[in-house]
Amino acid sequence: MSDDPTKERTMRAAVFYGAKEGLRVEEVPTPSIGGEDALVKVAACGVCHTDLHYLDHGVPTAKVPPLILGHEISGTVAQVGPQADPALLGRKVILPAVLTCGSCDPCRSGRENICARMRMFGNHIDGGYAQFVRSSSRDLLLLPPGIPLIEGAIIADAMSTPFHAVTNRAQVRPGELVVVIGVGGVGCNAVQFAAAAGGTVVAVDLQPRRRELALTLGASFAIDPAAVADLGKEVTRLAGTRADVALEVVGKPATFEMAVRAVRPGGRVCMVGYSAENASLPLNKVMFQELEIVGSLGARPVDYPKIFRLVQQGKVSVERVVTDRFPLEQVAAAFDHLRGNQGLRSVIVP
Image 1: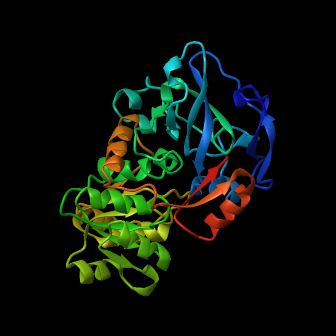
Image 2: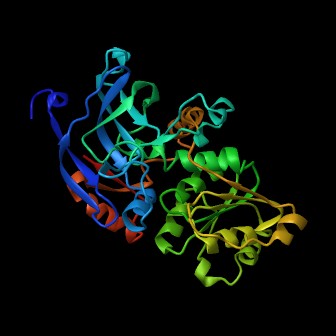
Image 3: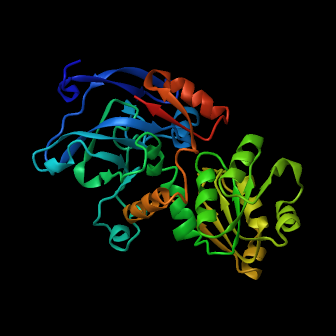
């Protein structure tokens, strides 16, 4: 390795060759840059269930493999193209999981997270399970002081996604009762943001350890859904009423139906978890009780500064959520860790 690592022609990366092949850690060409590009030396990349959909469930990536996975990236700017700002060199940054075009109708109406031409690291373009990643310098988000570079990687998705869900889609308000179904790597942050918004939070999860952690992250109550026959009745028993808001952060028909049953008349249900399956919906209840059901995807670029401030103010924590670190060579072990529902959020540290 030379004194200037950006001059190396190859780097180590975890390359996805398809669901039957999995990931291979191998030498690949270091990305070349030009124009407004930046080359980012990866500090950390979060391990996300989205990647498990590619690895285990046959969900196709937008780019035909081979492809470097990983979309929750933090790092340091190692090189910039001739049309990029040279002042970016050496700056600590995170990369938003979803890159937007800025010119389609959703982007122009302030809904960049559902951009018609969106691209995603580790899906449309090579991602962050590598020593370096290429990005447009316009998409870099400068990491403010006081936010750790390694743990800060999860802001790119595991924090931005629940922030958007809680703040923009579910619109949690002070004093509301909020049920969060599934408090893993994303749901635990939905707990944090709902509590920071002034909500009283009920955490619902099958895993005892996750329920315990949710109580330390701002939840007032925790429920094992396998131990109760009716979630709505149990929420009422604990908190005196059904929920104003339910956030589903699992992505299963059963948990979506559970969320609908957990809210009061006039309540709001926000779908954050991904599922390719269909769910049954009590249309009479939706109509008679004027329930609101919304989906939530990712976050908008404008949301990130707000998340940074909440972290800087200590209202939400990244350090307490990142429970495990794995070197790049152990990326397979990191996904086994995720499959086993161990910890909250793991990161790969190349």
